Length: 221
Image 1 (cartoon, rainbow, N blue to C red):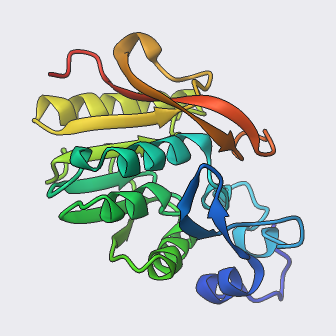
Image 2 (cartoon, rainbow, N blue to C red):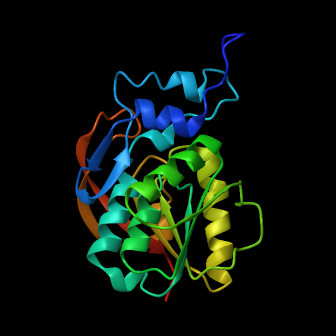
């Protein structure tokens, strides 16, 4: 729980002061504000049960592998409208802009992530529309491609995300998923497109190297 009497810090100011800038391992073209041992991240993220974990403060493998894939294969996004679902730090969204996407929208439920996306986009000289919202129960968005980095770490969330992505595909939207095969990734419903080695800072792995995959939904043309 947050301590009474302690003002909640301004997210952007806190991130700039406490999360140093560094290139992303395996994606050195992109710089991010990334948390370290001395960041005191709990002061911003909170410790209460309703406070969302600060997933945005680290480059997870699913995001890193998607960013690497988009930069290596810019034709995937060139001239297209892209939505980054569960965008976190904005890593994948930034890669999409750099690879030539027409427009990029980054969506995350955490307002602190939205602040981080704004700072990281400016750091990399790109423009991203960042939106704080939970859209996975809503109708499919008006976009050409949805990119999803590492959203299959929780069983209940995985079911909700997959249902949303299937509705989006049925509505004519292409879906790309980046994931290091976490426990709740529905692999039988997916088709592997590529594999890239990346560092994984998510799930308590401490930055170890993993072989992460790029997947489309099974049945996609």
